[in-house]
Length: 394
Image (cartoon, one colour):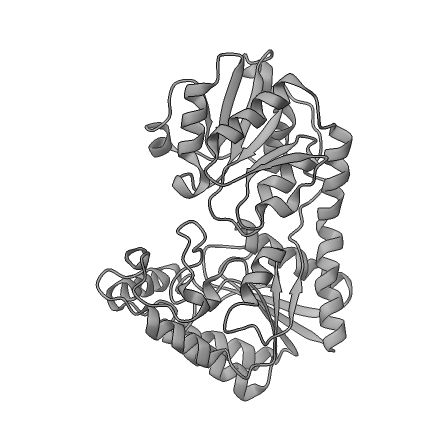
């Protein structure tokens, strides 16, 4: 058996790390495999970059001008197909294809012609919409019948709304493929069942994390920032804005007294301009060990995300022994249970504040229960589920 994964990145970002983890597991089992990727750099020995960053930027510009998101990049797609013809994989495992890294028409026509078995992990909802990776925040349901008059169009196209055309092109292209869809959460699986892809088999495989990295860790973090006696409310994201609930933390900072300390990780100078003085802002951490130390020093992770498939930060927090409070958004509530966190309705800042105050007043969740729940997301066990899928197909 020979397996090729196709993704935007290799070893970087959440999807890139998943690709490498799956690749290493395949190699350990003596299975020849490669990762074809388009963006950034990677020193992973089985990674093959098929598109230059300059070309990607040009294609991104053309996509904005023409409005045909996902249907540019002819030259890099030709190069991608050339690699596939050389490798001759038995299985192609698709991940993210929406970073101007492939022409869907050319690529899926090739898959159909060569009768290649496809697995496609939907890390978001882009495959069954005209434009949008996420639509939960705006409550759009057009994707269930036909995308048109896209309210988020300006994020993807400056001049034209081609959402109906792109929706129909995807619907046609993805038909009659030898395809199994994989989703990180039951929430995404349920969405797919209401989309034009509902006739394909769907398998839920949760994302996993490295439990040898994310575990309770001692550090001088509290002492370093002179917050030894504070109740630490932690937020972690790497693209802070409305969708990640930045405004919610700002509101919480106005409501909570000085016995609390809100800490946001993954910020930058632009974010800092929006934050009140009583929020501690930490830019990108040096490594995952440092991030685990910050989790371990906190009392609770608050995740007021407004659109998320299966947020890694929830799993990382549990693995470091702290509970999670999250909005009922996407796959976020699936990660916790009644023994390790609280779920409040989306936009219910009062309920979120009440949850934070409750956790400060009462120790209702134990570290042991959080750690036990985190075992469910051991990446070594999760990615073995991909192995079983491959073997069943072979």
